[in-house]
Amino acid sequence: MDYLEFKITCLEEFREILIAELAEIGFDSFLETEEGIDAYAPESEFDREKFDELISNYREAARISLIEGKMPKVNWNEEWEKNYDPIAVDDLVYVRASFHEPVPGFKHEIVINPKMSFGTGHHATTFQMLRHQGEVDHAGKRVLDVGSGTGILAIMAHLLGAREVEAFDIDDWCVDNGNENFDLNGVTTRMGLGTIRQVNPKGHFDIVLANINKNVLLDEMEIYAGLLPSRGYLLLSGFYTEDIEDLVNAAAPLGLELKKKSSKDNWAALILQKH
Image 1: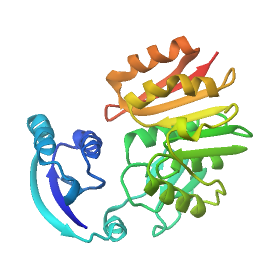
Image 2 (image 1 turned 180 degrees about the vertical axis):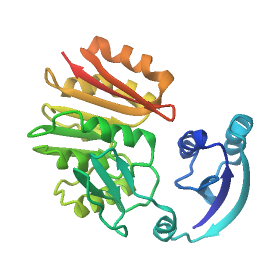
Image 3 (image 1 turned 90 degrees about the horizontal axis):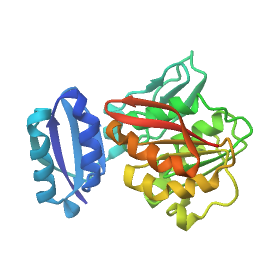
């Protein structure tokens, strides 16, 4: 399969936003560069009209310029090895690829086979979720990771001492990659395939993790609340700072109280607790 390659120069504060927006219109791989991002889309699935509209919307504010090309039969692992850098979340966790050396001084280490930008810790939502996980007691807890992606949050829950971790995603590619990453980190859990309604997780979970997007979070909020016992925690991300009020307002009637909020690069994350 041939891929279209777009070398996009933009302001640094717009990199994460553009990655998220491009992912919504069919782009499936990204590399961050010194100038901006390189974005890749399968030629057969590329929507020129949506792409042109997106670039037009951000061109002036983000100071976008781009070069378009074609890249046949991309070896994404090779490309990532050239461009992927480890991530440090305070002294809590060091996220690295298998081709990086370990670094001392961190409480935990996660090894991720880096195949996409999302879920590696580079994205501001994943970074904040990892940080918030470090602030919630996981020891002996039952944890649910909704839309697990690469499995990084489920792995973090395991490292923080969770008794049981259940994870799933709607994308079979993510399930395969997540299980590969589970193996790299000694996690015996297997990732499920489907939406939360299809998977239908049973029983109460002390902690529910959901790093998805605003619309899905709003649609599934009542399900999350129903899976939590009293004093259980719901950690959310995947939305912009201006969306915080909508998420908190949707959570409140379900008995979920905001305990903490954070933001990074205009992306937000919340810790909610059930009454």
